[in-house]
Length: 285
Image (cartoon, rainbow, N blue to C red; front, side, top):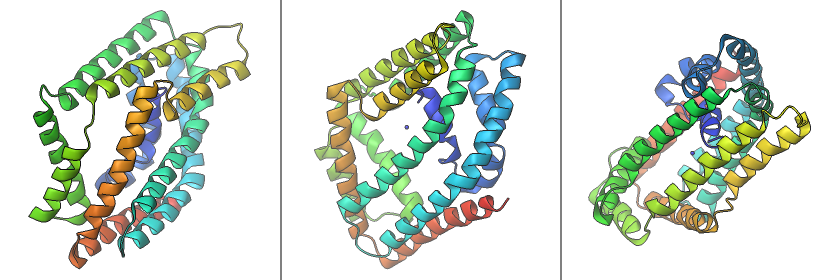
């Protein structure tokens, strides 16, 4: 889940907030995103003044146009949870989420072009240092010394997320996760190589946006192409790896859901309904 690495993550902030704080965070999203971006770039007062209304406009667009799409998607997911779920359907829902993210990316492009043109060498150096720090944190969290340690971390995170949806898992369900993780090796080296590629891509694009000879259309295409490379990486080893992981995730989701009790499915449907209620209420403000 970057703009070009990091700006993309910030864009997705509208859609990945915890349900318990979604209203407050969503209503204050422009300020929160501006604060987060400032942490990465250390903006000047003039840049902050330019960014604020742009984010407010984006937020208004998102509330009007994207929240209804989220509600419709949650309806589909809620319906899925009431019966058997196929791997194909799970993958379809993942693609829908990607489509929502891509729509938000597209609306973010003018902001990136506008602010990117004003960045100084010092700000880009600050950004690079933030990326390096973030990468070190990623390695600490996801790249353990042994394959066994990596599987343990993945199991704990998978179990934690599944229990948010279904409630407590039983031993059989935990074994489903264990077996899936044992079969499906995630290669942190391959993923990290893509992180570094995206870092370099982001920096190159931001540097190019400062070129006064480039037209706005050319700059827009630069950013758009960066997003496209995130969706379909030129790092073929990574793209093949992530496609395989996605398919395996869909299959594991279907297997886990097939093992759930009526009580667990009701828990999952209520979890989805809570989000739908939040997003529905936010549309009307």
